[in-house]
Image 1 (cartoon, rainbow, N blue to C red):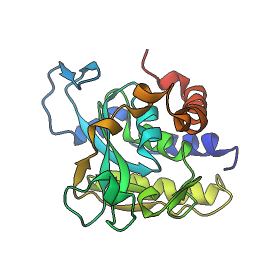
Image 2: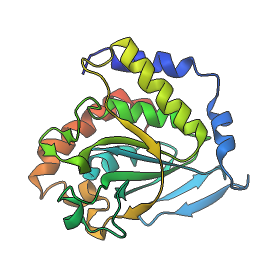
Image 3: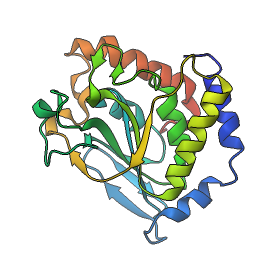
Image 4: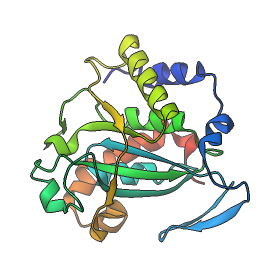
Length: 225
């Protein structure tokens, strides 16, 4: 990954005509403030709620990252993009279901925009490796954006093209940008995996912790207080 990625992406985001509040108009909820209980945290929102679905490698890593962003109400590990109904983790790991490990992100667009979520998405994994992230290999680890509306599609495609053009990465981006269809929540033991296994699973220390530390440095101004 080229070191100019952060600069390149922020330049692209700043050129977009829509503000965070304008992006928030996608939401179909009411405007009343309220508190949403997610099971692991309680977050006060502006009442405008939206959803993003990303696949960018092992969901143990991506959940740990996105749930720290201010404005993210919940980050749920699961599966999407395949043909098997209600898949299990064991089935998905075969690479034969068509599903990718993914993250379903519910967020408050008044606090964090889809543009900013995209910035984190591309900054925290390698979107140039086909069907793999590091030592994790298979179609279940592919890079993907599963858009929920036309605006998300247009933004994802625009930024992908601009990042390729800018030379932010040494190789072309292979991230698939496809319509969202169905999300299947992963088994309970996958949820908040890093939080629950940080000190017991070597994968957490060797793989997730370095990614999380880098993310916290780059996006320190966007984290929950």
